[in-house]
Image (cartoon, rainbow, N blue to C red; front, side, top):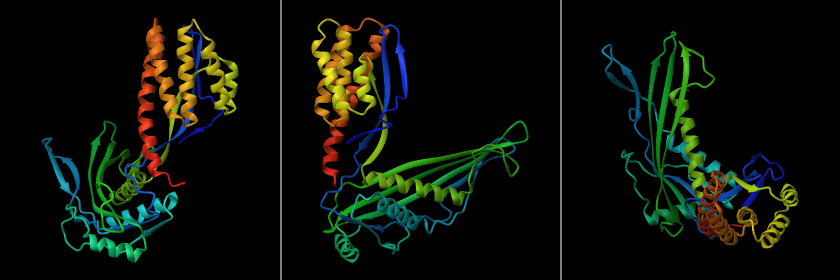
Length: 351
């Protein structure tokens, strides 16, 4: 579950004169598992709104200072009737566009009629079964709580201008049910924040970035949390950096041609042939570990990264050697986490 981005592009090359070794950096696209594992048997999923919108007078405040310099807060009223509806609609669009499920459906009617907007209330199992039948889906994602709050304020500057700030915080809770009414996983709770800052002279915006109107900021925050929520249900690809040692030009050419198996053969042959230079063997072991990671053999990558750590530890003499050792230890720890993630991705893979 690794792929190379800009495979033939070397982003940076740093020459360590002490070790006469060129360290090259590449970018990998690495797949990360979803926070919530939804079984492969679930091909279609429905989204329902089981949350109560917060009151218009809840959550938003504007900070001001009195003439004596004391802080006061004005409560800001902002209609929120459509917040939960918008969040489920945007989550529907996000999940539909990811092509992870065969079908994604949205139930357009809110389920709750009470006013307890801060309470998280699970859907009765019989109601889940009925909803799944109506929507013809294998599972239900239920939005059970969404609350957003903000703090805005201004700070005067010395040249007849002011900085404006808007800090927004959100909390969201979801439950995921099978079509039989059972919970698939523990609830998903997401808390996050979005921050804006801008410089103004009266109503004229001086800085490139500015502070949006509160209603627009809430819509932007909802879009942000919808994207983050979708990423919790579906595996994601992210970019990560890796380094390797460019001691052997022939292997470097293989890397630039995206021939990692060819580079691996060269590094392994050189490792076996090297009998005296333990520092070089350590660098080769690190390269071999990277090659195995890229061809998705994490077990072998772990073996070779552990070997690299041991060889760097045994041969460290200079500050560069110690840095190489620390880098190897960090990479080994990272591979341990990737090994765990591979196990989870196997459960989430729908190919």
